[in-house]
Every structure is written in structure tokens, then in C-alpha cells.
Length: 150
Image (cartoon, rainbow, N blue to C red):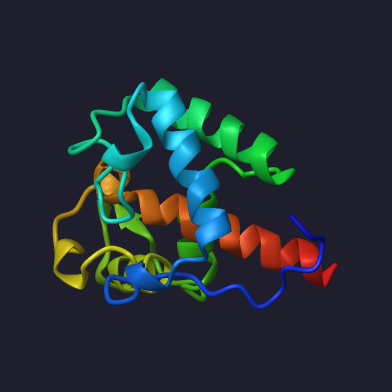
């Protein structure tokens, strides 16, 4: 992959078909290898836990494989950090339940997840259940764009 990849676009629920083929193939391969699946069994819209049966250790394996494939460092807890950063001092959670402001920020940070899944009462511990393969695709795109800009 070339060093100048700035301008890559993240995908959303409506734009999965516009994923960059070179990046998608590597992301798909990382998921397939980590989860013992065939590449064609991994799609951008798949829920990682519910549909691909991933467990917490699998997330670490997937992140490690993506770091190697793209020569990146994937920050742990990056999605939550992004959501909290955009709150401007508002409360993120109360007794483990996400606030309305936090739900709105997560919906913005995770355009690959249908908006109706960010429901009142969602617990902090349940956020990972929303993750799609596209969540990691978008994270890779974000990090590649940052890398190209620096």
C-alpha cells in the first residue's frame, strides 16, 4: 500500500458498497483469519459478536492482525474515547447506562451502525455488541488518513 492514502472515505449503513477494495480485502482477511472463517463469510454489515461469534480475545487478535496488515497502532477504547471527546463536558454515562448525549455521539462516531440501535438504556458494557466489521474498516480508514496527514 502506498504511503499517501489520504482522502479515504469511511463507510456508513448506506455506503457499504463504496468500501475501498484494497483496504476491505485486508480487513476481511484479518477477520477471517482471526475467527477461523472463509473470507466470503465476512461482510461489512456483520455484527462481530452476534453474527461472527467473536469473543473479547478475538478483538485483540483482530486488532493485532490489522496493525500488522496496515502498519498502524490501533488504540484500545478508541471509539469510546472519540465519543467522550465530542461531549463537551456533558456526562457520558450514569450508573453504567449511556446518556442521550453519549448515544448521539456514538451514533455520529459509528455511522456503520443503524441509528435505531442506539437505544435509551444502552449500557456501556453493551457498546461492543453494536460493532460491525465496518467499525474496524472505518477505524483503519481513519488511522490511515491520520498517518498520511502527518
